Length: 124
Image (cartoon, one colour):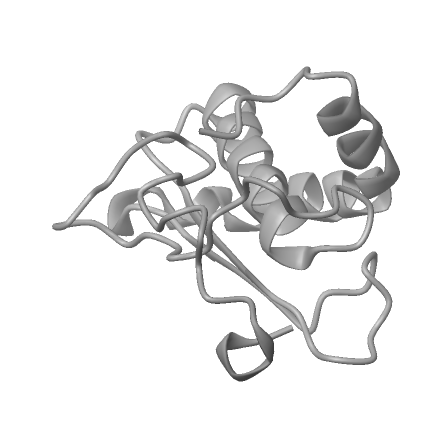
């Protein structure tokens, strides 16, 4: 649905998946509350991007990782149109490992969906 069809943002845009409003950093405007945890890319990809970023930091030792996941209408949920990972300039040597980590997480997207249903992930 869209605003033209009755989905007018009743849950509020302050309900980010990570619980933060970050005006000087990249953020997703998607609210996750009330969305289907099996099919709504705004909900799934928010959690997935956070998990990928956390794993990249934990497994590679980079200072930070920003992960952007783009969907496309009609594509399978486990086949994002694009995943972009931004690492600090001085740590770009970790980019191949970061891409492998992202691929591993995408293959496990069903686990994310199940984890959301079980309350394993913070959504706001």
